[in-house]
Each structure stands twice: as C-alpha cells, then as structure tokens.
Image 1 (tube, one colour):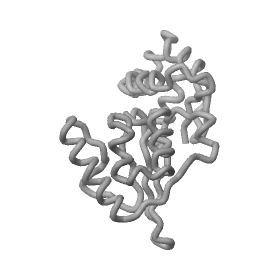
Image 2 (cartoon, helix red, strand yellow):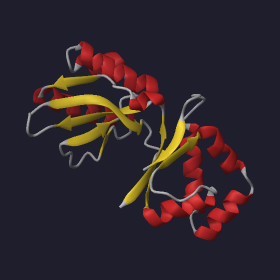
Image 3 (spheres, rainbow, N blue to C red):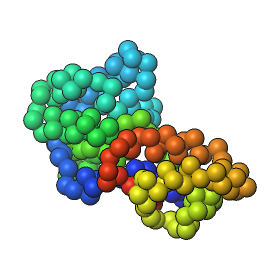
Length: 188
C-alpha cells in the first residue's frame, strides 16, 4: 500500500466536465498521442505498453485544436481538454465494462506527473521530517509546506529518517502549485 502526495484545489471537489467518447475515437486518440509523443520526444501515455480500463494521458504539451480534431471538435471534449490544459492536469480515460461507456474527464494528476507515491513507511517518515503528524490522510496549506521545506531543520530530520532524497521532488511538487491561493498539499 502507498500514500499519494499531491496538490489539491477547490476545483478538484467540484463537478468537472466529462465527455463520452467512442472506442474508435479512443483508438484514434491513442495513435495520435503515440505519434505526437514520438515527434516531441516525451511519453504522453503512461504506461503505454498496457493500458487497462482506466488510464491517464498528457495533453498540456499539445494544441487544443489538434487534440480535439481527433474527436471532430466535440464541444464536451473541448471543455475537458481546455480545463485540463488550463489547470495543468492530465486527462483521465475510463472504460466502464458494465455500461460500455468510455468517459473522458480532467484527472487529479498534474500534467508533469510530479506527485509522490510512497510506501507507508517512507510516507510517514517524510511527514515526520516535515514536522507533520503522520497520518494516512490529510492536507495543509501550500504556504505552510513551503515554510516547512525552508526550515533548516527539515533536511536534517529527513536525513535521519532516510527520506532526504524525496525533498527535491517535494519542492518540484510545491512549485507546480504556482501561486494558486487556495491550493493545498494533500496526501491519501
């Protein structure tokens, strides 16, 4: 089991746009992402070797019009991709076997995938290094996390617990929050 550390925003709790797509459009979209990924030199589908019923795709490095052309510029798809790009998020694709619907929505994962997914022991040690009560679920304001990261005692506590190598990744995660006032650092 693991704990995922990520940045949350109030928009994560609100009902977001979604679009229903066909299997053919999904296949065309996957081909498009593979070819564009090869062209620009980054993986847009992860993992690309095996994609199950639910997966995520990067859309921020691509033009909105190019992506939505695969879906014949469907208004619902435009809304999802536009919101994902605006918020710097990936899109999530889910195929529901019982209803056979394929849904496209904004993912909770950042486009660059800077979230930390740590085993319980490492996650608790990281929280303790940040002087946060170790719990499997929680959140704090981004400003408080920035203050904890700038505290000179934090690297020492992290080194004692063997999690100091996670601090640069945590700083990249905090940087991905930009200056959004209501953003929070959350783990679950």
